[in-house]
Length: 110
Image 1 (spheres, rainbow, N blue to C red):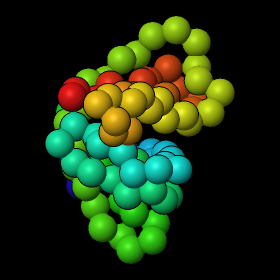
Image 2 (cartoon, rainbow, N blue to C red):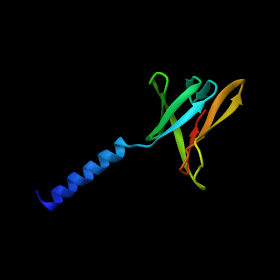
Image 3 (cartoon, rainbow, N blue to C red):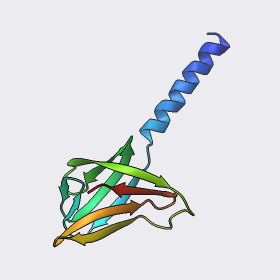
Image 4 (cartoon, rainbow, N blue to C red):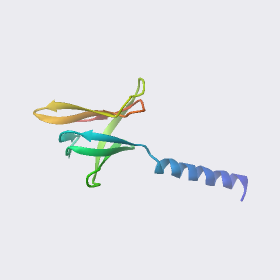
């Protein structure tokens, strides 16, 4: 193989490792909440970012829920992963999630 071919193979392998190790964040929802148009039951979830979506995976049953998000990156790193919930018309609505160890906040459209 030529040096150029080896570099291409190495770059593709590194890209595959990066995608396979996409960071996930653990979130606990203490009550049922509405995230966008999706209802999430109380429980533990793993959250991954895929493009303009947050993908919630239930720790209880492995079901996944995809919700559109807006990514905000600013300020200092968040110390922990925190879900911000607000009451709207008597229902709990997920407004945002601050991702611990990063400057990223997921903003949910209602």
